Length: 176
Image 1 (cartoon, rainbow, N blue to C red):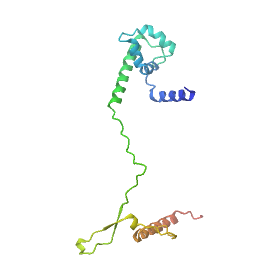
Image 2 (cartoon, rainbow, N blue to C red; image 1 turned 45 degrees about the vertical axis):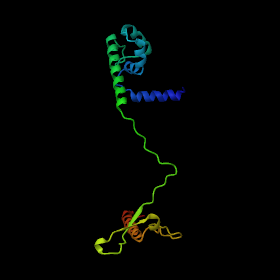
Image 3 (cartoon, one colour; image 1 turned 180 degrees about the horizontal axis):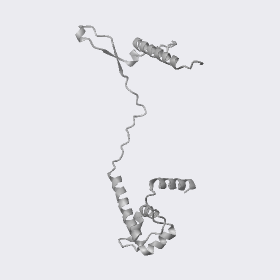
Image 4 (tube, one colour; image 1 turned 90 degrees about the vertical axis):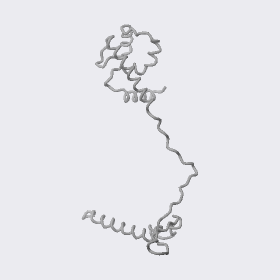
């Protein structure tokens, strides 16, 4: 493992491990399964383990060597925390991935509602749907940026542009 990888693991460890818990607690959480396997169902001899904790620099929250009672209680807390985290992971539903469209997928052309009424009595008039390809047709060679819009759309865009220009005029500084 490179130094960069170990530094990244150290940063992630510091982010996930609250300073409200002792180094001994976090070590016991990280090595929970190994401790259970080594104990093989037997009671742990905390007095003998304290010397090993001291050698490894594992302290209580105040930075002192833990007492046998403190070490035992810390182990019980670590076991409860590991069980709690495992229950949370088991209860958390897997996040479903969003379905992906095939590479050759293209959207279906939409319909544009036009204001042209259908021939007939006024009470039966309704809007006509026309495919986008026929309703929106850009005109090549025109300088009008709104040439691809319907006449109503062009007029609306020209009004908006005029209002924006008027608002800009009011925002300009006197010396500019």
